Picture 1 (cartoon, rainbow, N blue to C red):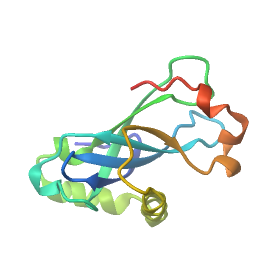
Picture 2: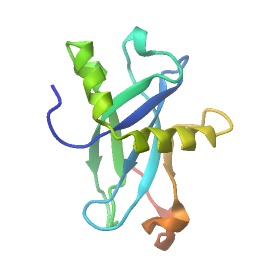
Picture 3: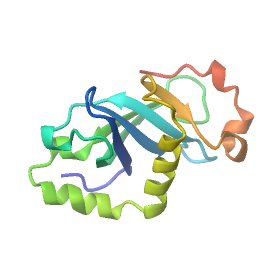
Length: 139
């Protein structure tokens, strides 16, 4: 069971391809680096419905000299839980503001984007000081 670490919001955005959007902040101590990660994951069949909320555990890594993590692997907790009610409890622990922010960012997407990293709030976060196009994201 997931007891500590990064717990964040994720939402299924394409049930056919098992694609999710997950919200996180890639900061590792200073600054704010908010981001949406789009990726395909394995989910139990009953969770493969667009709009389904998922509690996400985040795995992070930094490769290179960046002031933020450049690898984020969103891991749906439901994939490793024996009891579904534990997943619902974790979903309820995620602040409503995070769900609203993720839903807002998903609504800005015209279609299901390709897998990747999508920095958000660029002008009001630490991203404004970074050449985003030069980042070597770890996939």
